[in-house]
Length: 63
Image (cartoon, rainbow, N blue to C red; front, side, top):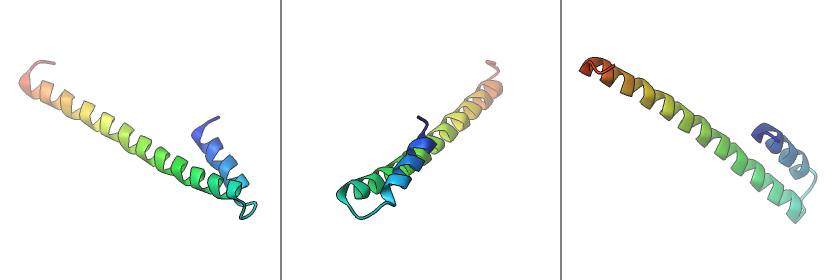
């Protein structure tokens, strides 16, 4: 199951009422969305650091 599938699953369960289980699914849905955003940012940072490292090596002539 992908993150998006898990979010959709939790959303579908979460909208079904005000039971404790539905509340937990809404909380889990929110946590999964936050996790997805953190992963996206983390991947961007890794890419950016790679680019900067490459530029440093080029300037130092150690490519």
